[in-house]
Amino acid sequence: MTGAVHDQAEVEAIAAELAATLPPHAVLWLEGPLGAGKTTFARAFVAARGGGDAAHSPTYGLLHRYRGTRGEIVHLDCYRLRDPEEAAAIDWESALAADALLIEWPDRAGAWAPSPLVRVSLDHQDEATRTVTVQR
Ligand SMILES: Nc1ncnc2c1ncn2[C@@H]1O[C@H](COP(=O)(O)OP(=O)(O)O)[C@@H](O)[C@H]1O
Ligand SMILES: [Mg+2]
Image (cartoon, rainbow, N blue to C red; front, side, top):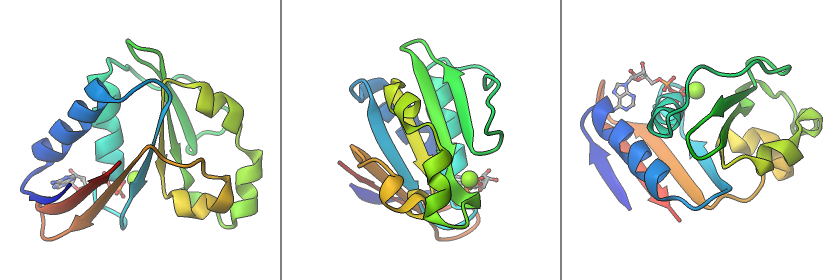
């Protein structure tokens, strides 16, 4: 589906709906330019799954682990990868073992990024309006 959403709460509602309905081990790609709302989406997804603060992670800033009611949620932000080969250092096996794996900037991980069950694309229209596309 593609549509315009008019505020952050609407994006958070889409994230919560996906969090409630996706099967175990779902991989989500979060795409779109800086400030579009990818991290906002990821936080709402984690919150909807009852996830609290991020557990300590050795790859601080890149990989965050949360304990949700259904199991672990991993949020991976590939923004800072300068070359896809840097993604070789990511523990993909444990990330894929999580109940949900959300990947921001998956293109920066190149062929390392596991295929998504769902692709969420966000783009700016104005201050609070975003175009949201959810592809399954
Ligand atoms: N409709 C909206 N959906 C998502 N974020 C929004 C929306 N309207 C305003 N915002 C704001 O835009 C910013 C998005 O930032 P962030 O989620 O970090 O983006 P990204 O991770 O894509 O770079 C946040 O400050 C958020 O409050
Ligand atoms: Mg972000």
